[in-house]
Amino acid sequence: MKKTVKIVAALMIASLCVSSVFAKSKKTKKAKEAPKVEAPKAKADMLDGFEDGMYWLAVGSSWSDGDISSEVELSSDWKTEGSNSLKCSFNQTPEAGGCATFITEAPAIVDVSPYEAWLTDIYNPLDVPIQVSFSLSTGASWEWHESKCFDVPPGVTKDLKMEFFVNALKCAPSNWEFTANLADSDDVRRVAVKVIIPGNKEGCIYIDNLRLQ
Image 1 (cartoon, rainbow, N blue to C red):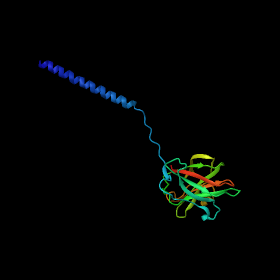
Image 2: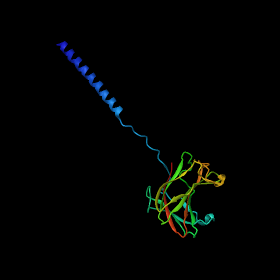
Image 3: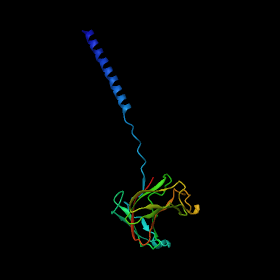
Image 4: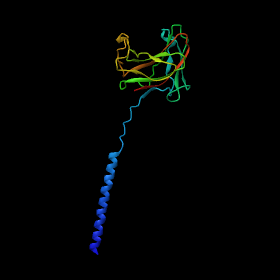
């Protein structure tokens, strides 16, 4: 009888060992067949989404250069992120056209050195194309660095991009040629959006989702 019990016990132990081996084999097989998971793409950091207050102004006559910007206000009429965008209004342009500039001297991020570019979404409700450029003023001298102009047709244009370090900005040290990189990128003093409008037009544009990437 004792011999029979020992044999049964031995068989049970052998069965458990075999089950354990098969279980490990299945787990190993499952791990090998698991699908590859792609790393998440880097997210852009918000320069301004116009959700936390109003820090922008229209240059207007304050710069004494004929600027025709008249007013800025938060608006829920159109947006690509959050609840608001910035409505940028301008007076009627002369026959030859005009320029309207909108700025903030309280940017949410003042050190853009870890980033490569600034992206913006724009809605042009006019019935004609406009042009838009972007500028960052940096350092103790508030050096103006401006991008090339982007053509913006009527309607929505997303992801307009000012690149910082591809020798494509103009500033005084580059003799206003588009050959400069952004200097003092860890010390941004001013952010500006410059809009060039054809002659005899009055109205507004909307900007939203200003982000660094």
